[in-house]
Image (cartoon, rainbow, N blue to C red; front, side, top):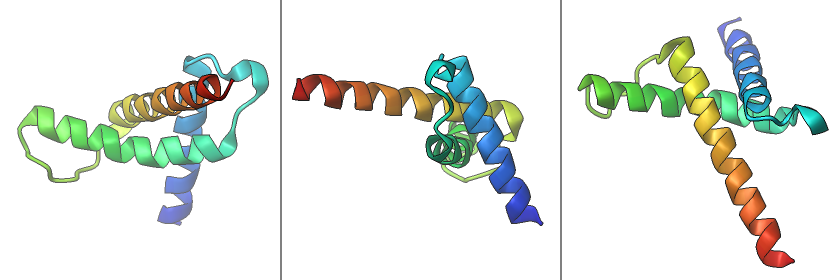
Length: 89
């Protein structure tokens, strides 16, 4: 049950990050939502651990750290994807 809860939480956080960054026009990319939500939780947790002085220990980041990490991951993906398509044209 915990793993299912983590997956659903990751999907919701990742979808929220896409909505905050303005991705709602073309719909939500659920694969990106999952990766950004789960990966963003790790990124947010790592940043909060470093800012709190805990070192590189991975700790639960909480809801705010998860959203912040998901926004960072989603924004990075959108930047990289835009850069890759503009260099092909």
